[in-house]
Length: 233
View 1 (tube, rainbow, N blue to C red):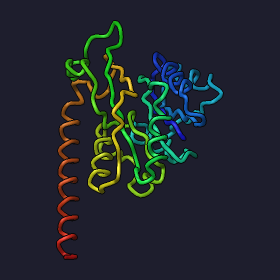
View 2: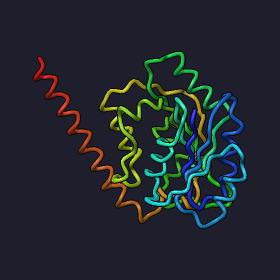
View 3: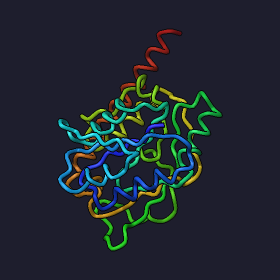
């Protein structure tokens, strides 16, 4: 099992994220912290844990690149991602990996997620306050555990999709009809605070443009698949 933590200037939360991995009841894993050129104490904090492999991104800083560096550097059969400001429940890895061991055809699983507002933080303008109530199925990397082999067949995250590169990856998996399962349990607690990249007003246009491209490519893939199916029959 390989746990990949993309991180940049996250000195405030990183230790909590790493600790939530160390509290897992899963017996064996590696932790890779991929640093997108932080200028705070992120490197010092990551290196203070003997069990953390620290990787500095000399080139191409960015979330998709960080995840891909982690995937390419990983040694585990399973891949999981954790944002540097989020937290896992102690049974996250054992629950998801255990399910995949019992169901060897399943290539990835996602869990339910509960959002929580960082104490002292105001709700970011781009965040829907009602999401703080209840919990939700989370098609997001932090709720994902996937077989490493899936990234070889489906591909890694595509940096050209910017902040919605994860939406693109899940869309490609869905269109490829990759066997997956939803674990109906909250195993991820996602922190909401003013520095969340996805909720910054200036990202709204980039998100809309990216989502439109994801949708178009998804439709094209489905059309091509249907056309190939009709041709064969």
